[in-house]
Length: 112
Image 1 (cartoon, helix red, strand yellow):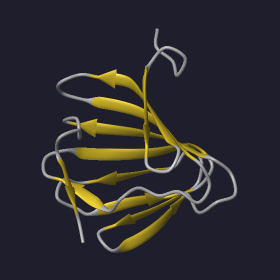
Image 2 (tube, rainbow, N blue to C red; image 1 turned 120 degrees about the vertical axis):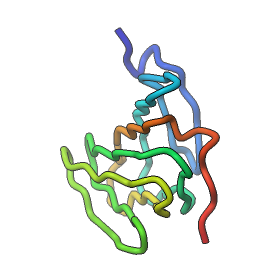
Image 3 (cartoon, one colour; image 1 turned 180 degrees about the vertical axis):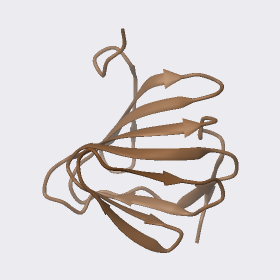
């Protein structure tokens, strides 16, 4: 069994957390926590297809120049090569699952 309590943990951005729930050569599942007012860097992946699933809070995703608002239990898929960025513009922490196939680490390219 795996949980946030025993998963590999890392810190990114401005106080954001990530936990590797599944870290295999063919797929990655990461539970991420973003405090209010944080965002990731706009980027794309050459090969990875990603699904962002909101567990709690509200997410703003900018995908290919279009902004989408996601509430708990809503998801959005991002295809390889499409620039995207996740924001927590809400008043509470945002918790999401990021599912990547293949894994996105080492596949990330900064986007203008």
